[in-house]
Length: 391
Ligand code: FAD
Ligand code: DHB
Image (cartoon, rainbow, N blue to C red; front, side):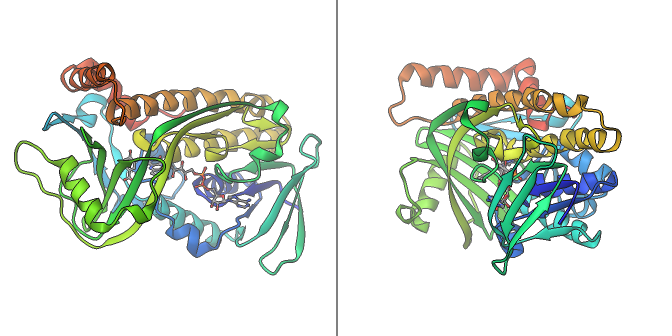
């Protein structure tokens, strides 16, 4: 099989890259080791930055997002038993949109298949070869177990943090920056209406909690838990007790309980490899970098990476020029490091360590109060949260 761009991974990065290339008349093939049903059901991100939404609109992918997505004009920081609203739109003129990542993935798969794209699900043993030459190849086993080979001009490694693309690059070619936080998130999807119209980021002495949503009928809630915890330590009753305690406020507020539809445990780390390229293999999205979820940046970074990558591939494949492929990694890493810093800032401001040094805790409260009371500090949070403009 021959194609121009072989893409490993059908997450937001791989699927959107394939769509952007198609708009430019460039052919691609996507290989995904999970089933279509699995990737369409995988519950993850919920917050789309303003530039992400604008891009999806520009490339014809926002019809359902514009109908069902929930535009938000502010977020709430809850600490000291009080709410402090960060007025995102008043401060920046822009909004964020709550629309589940798996809805974007569904929209992308539908659009790609309608355009006749090749997405091979349930493949295995994907390997990349000859990436330092002009004719890279990808081999894999198809869903029936038969060995297949794709010859391509370039390969995009969009296979997430646990994929094969990054590990196939020799260690000596990459610099790794890795920071593991002493926290994890327990996330639940609940069939009950959200208790507030806006997201609530709560700093409580028992730990951080986040109130988000997916639809007017479905709430998304997260609790900071210990990284060594397992899901079986968290019964429904314990989850609700902890959520009620952490969202308690001086005044009226109560979460709406309902059946838990889905639950997940997610460790928290910051991870970046530099450069995001080895020969004709280009890394994009979580395969190259991870942020802790507190800043809601991971999927948005993946979207930015593939926008930059699609322009670079277009220039390379249609005019033979290499400027943009040469600058791809540096261009993306600038935004990646801004998001790493912002996510680190949000994480450290909002989470409580068990062995919290009282000095650290005083600093945290001071930072929260400053952010809530200074227009300059609130604007800095807001412009990072809604997303700095794409190039
Ligand atoms: P992925 O979505 O991981 O996709 C990679 C794909 O590659 C997958 O489909 C995988 O099955 C496939 N794959 C893996 N290995 C192979 C292989 N060997 N062969 C073939 N295919 C393979 N981000 C935000 O922007 N906003 C948020 O609000 C937000 N909240 C989050 C909350 C939680 C709890 C979590 C866990 C993450 C959150 N994120 C958020 C992060 C976001 O979900 C990720 O950054 C995003 O999924 C990255 O997209 P991707 O396409 O790079 O990788
Ligand atoms: C959601 C996830 C996040 O990481 C975040 O910061 C805000 C919202 C969500 O899943 O809705």
